[in-house]
Image (cartoon, rainbow over all chains, first blue to last red; front, side):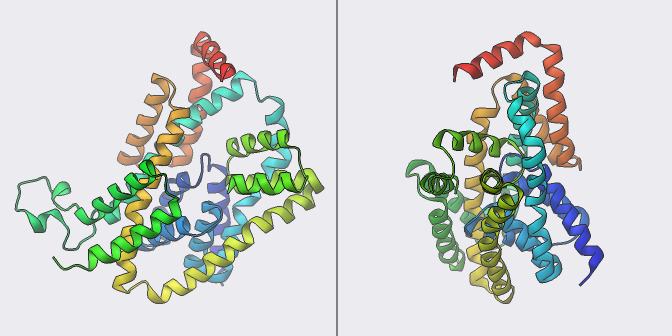
Length: 200
Length: 165
């Protein structure tokens, strides 16, 4: 057990929690940067963590913290990272929220969130791009380059059609049939196993 | 998860129905996981600091145990091809989930040209530079304040619209 690493882990996740406006997906943008800078996890491990955090019940932020903490520093890492998430919220709820409630209608308060919310949309779009990077460029027989010999720019040519098909199917199931996200994730796991096991 | 908390809290008569609406609203506006924030508010309301601590532990311990078990199990299987294929499929659909969430929040957040510009600038800076996202959030808050001082009239319109909702 490396004490300095645990302290570092705690403050990293407390900082993430303190600025985690707008839900679990914003956390992907926040965490991605911290992890790239600190070289704590590989991109592959980070992707597994995102997938598992979406599938498991409970708050995504907590799930992500537990998993990342475990990967970086084992059982104690998991505990420290998980506890770091609610502590800033605890302090805010007790000390700051009474002020926020009192000035709920104040224009300055509204304007702060006017700006933050617009940034949050950008952070979520960025999260989509970070997550898409791995499956959309997965190296297997469904890369466009293996099907056609076209003179496409390389970022198009190495796209994985299997992943894009699963992405579009999920989008369709979620928007058209309003299926439960967990169900859609399970369907896409099965689709992934079927499609990527084919050796075209 | 939020509707589940609302139901439990109201059924147990811990908090009035009207009050829970306020708690949901403020839990979404302060940073952190909404479910965690709600458990803190409800716990604090009922039994002050001790209540908040107990409620939040109740909220995180089940997730902690489940995720830890999966993390331990998965470290034995993650090299298997079947697992990797399943994960590639899952990540593809997570992209769809994230895009839908972005659209939902954009409907509330991107209300005019300025907010659209803030969103676009955020994405471009994140893709092209190594700027820290926390810095962008702080800049967003400051931009909001700046606009308040530049266009006080615009803000009056904006707040009026808010009141009508």
